[in-house]
Image (cartoon, rainbow, N blue to C red):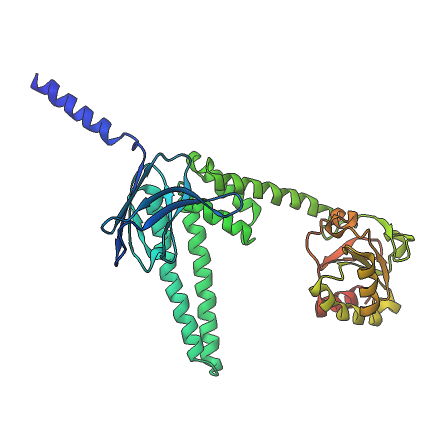
Length: 374
């Protein structure tokens, strides 16, 4: 009988240890003087990236508590009334402990659940690396005027930046069950510091729980957009015949690309409102004057909204080549055909209309034109 009771006790204990926590509890401890009754807010980010209130509590004797039921993993933020800063916390069922000084909420210690432990591990490393970067920057300021020392410090900073990138990427790959990994991947996509193939491979390695999160769904949307753009880019890749178009010229006449080709042709997307375009125009004018008689033609494609602005900029900048525009901003059919979503953008064509280079500027443009015209 005693053996049966003992076995039942062990079984109950094992079951209890493996139960999923029923809801979450956030227990906060603040150091420094914080008045009793001070409001503490738990917020999340809305679709417009503005904070939305989730729950409110009060400080009592330097402590505060939130309780609730966690749904899909998500990052929330803790704000304290009249105090600067905030602290991110991953909402998941379990007991979450937060310890912070009232004057440095952003450096609060958060622990107690797996996702918050992942988050804290990453943040501690990044805080350490941030201090390292600041130290190098201070050394560079101190070494002002000493070119030898500055060169060495620049190399040190470059090495450090590579180390930081490697750490972040390795962290993502080795923690496929961490929400912070998905957040870092989304950020890397936004910075365009990672290729689509690698994004897909990393996403595929994520656990089902992470794939269900809001940020994971955003990653899939970004990945779909990247792949769609890559497919469109194939139509204007180097080595491909440039898409043919016919469009209105500055006097309303219809001009066709095939009739404007020279031995070398620059299809230049620009606009009167585009400062980088206008800054590059003097260089394009110089190249055109130097090589037009040898076979260089230019076709300007304007993404202006107003015809008068477009025509005035042509006159002001002395752009004496062919120009076309539907005056429809980025909805211009030619821009969409060439998958242009930012300007300046340029495509250099050979005499057969095949794209041989893209987005060359300054000396690089002249060097390529000279090479093609021998």
